[in-house]
Image (cartoon, rainbow, N blue to C red; front, side, top):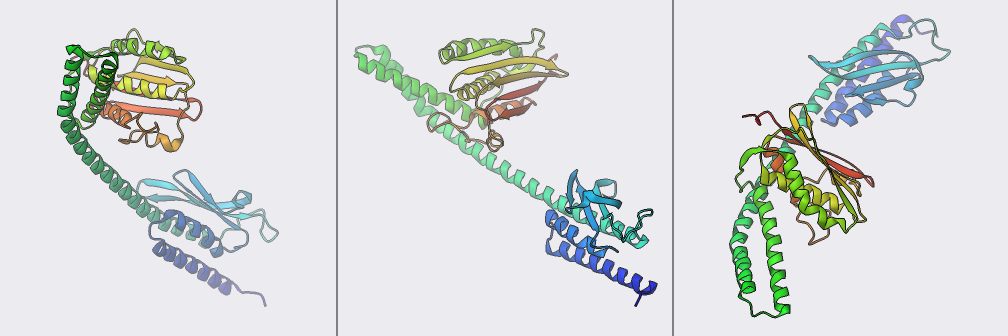
Length: 371
């Protein structure tokens, strides 16, 4: 018996209502899990169409495409924008693959199907907005927790630095007095020298801790980065030539002055070069360059070393994170660099390829340098 028009329309309306019910149900069940909502929408929506066996769906959100397996085979499709107010999230499309059951000369979509995709698009847009708000909330919460941890670590570091400074000063002072006093045999002089070197190394670590915890006041004056680079490399270059490491200077002779703390800028450069050298166990090249770009001065340190995996790259500015063996690094170098750059209203851009090397670019503003 042939189905009449009223029965056909009723059957289609029931399918559409079931579809909307199922979509509202998954939104409730999956809460704000946007990926799960999209995955189930791709399964549910074709069932509401006039030809469910030929229907395919594609959902694009923030330029990422989610689609049923054969959507690319569709000959006809209808679409609607995913928007809430003025904000656009993407597009939803429903298509039909070609078949003998469909008239190839006209669009096979019913007006009710066009209405349905608009309703689904509106509801899905609301799901996306809620999920986006929740995601932003979780990100903000994580940032707050990270800031609280950093604040605690900073306070702890400041306390440790102050507690260590006094006894370390005494160790260093008395060791130097013993060395100057004479009457020491060769072995004793060597042992005293080791104590002095270890004390000086420890003092540098304490200095990093104090910079990290903002306990050392800045001395902001007009400085030329080229001068800092040249004076720093003068002491570093000779030390590493024997290890097959070539340090190259490429400095912009017309570099303008910036307002900065020269000691802290030296600390930044030393930390970056030290890390670059550590990435060259079999030798290679470190290039230190400066240039002007718009209203900023760029300091770049590039190496031809081992590079970093993405997982390591994401953690390098975390305090006390290090890939160096125990006893060879504190994990404070790059967190100190970031702290100094941030305090100078600058920014750091890092690029790295595993096995090909890394590049650190520091941008510092020159807008206050003329005062």
